[in-house]
Length: 295
Image (tube, rainbow, N blue to C red):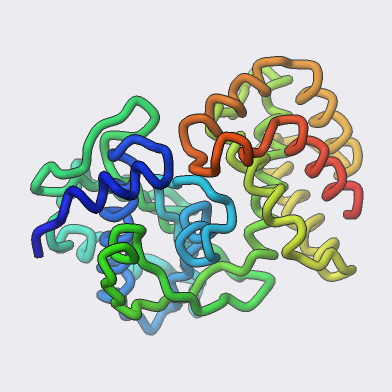
């Protein structure tokens, strides 16, 4: 079915963004829907997560574009070799897309990079020239996935209701991942081997919107500290208590003005909230301090 480019233009006007953003979002959703609908494995389940899930599965929670798709594969047996081959075979067969390179398997994930075969996806300085989809292999999720319906902004405006549903990572698990990831990435800037990328400011932004949606009870705290300890051991090769790490990260955020600059640039590029409603760096930092103080 041919696409109506005027609808993309209308979305761009409504969201206050370049037309490249809703076009890429639409094609990203197409990749997600094709992958999930073709994935059938007795070895485990694909669970949709990350920033894109917060927008298209959780009622536009964060009011920002996300150009990548993240999945968790939760295996029933521990072996994932057959699943990696199945995912790669599916990736090679998606209608309207082609891989720009063979995926390089890693121990913890597999990554695919696609381009649309008709070259409709447009370039923009804030976007990658390809669609990235990652599948992370994990032994479990702390909270039960939620079944959600997803569709692109284009399909919603066009009145196309596919009724496509998939399992999504819970807001609690997403919050835990984002807190831990943000902490070790920011902390790494104070070492010789920084693992920070300016796009990591998305975590600070998103946590503001996640904070009021979750219940920080004893179970959440225990799960959060388990993930934090594992990430620090694996990523930083260092022993930090959660409280000390939070203190140091907050100090870095206030002391190094580059973080504020990176945050503001990221929000300017990716947020589609009205200018007067866009979350400031100061508001995001205050919320992060309040959130982490409860853990």
